[in-house]
Length: 87
Image 1 (cartoon, rainbow, N blue to C red):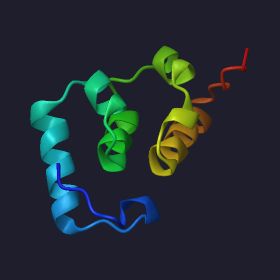
Image 2 (tube, rainbow, N blue to C red; image 1 turned 180 degrees about the horizontal axis):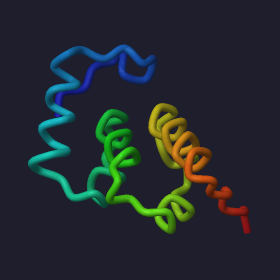
Image 3 (tube, one colour; image 1 turned 45 degrees about the vertical axis):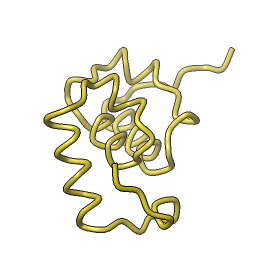
Image 4 (cartoon, rainbow, N blue to C red; image 1 turned 30 degrees about the vertical axis):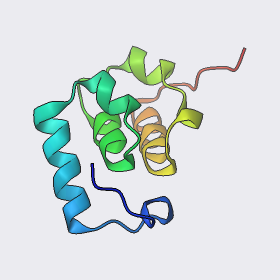
């Protein structure tokens, strides 16, 4: 996948968005998307309705890029899901 040096700073090109959407819809399973290193693909996976409440509780936001981690926290808040306690 096309990656550039500005991804970590939140600057993404239109091509990045198109490629991430295409890969998410056509090429990747939810599990593969969650484990992908592209923050856009991770974000799409976290926002996808196929991720249920149990899976939202199990996801570790610290393993995600900042953008999908924020989306994960938003979904948890909206659905009234408590964060998983660290063991």
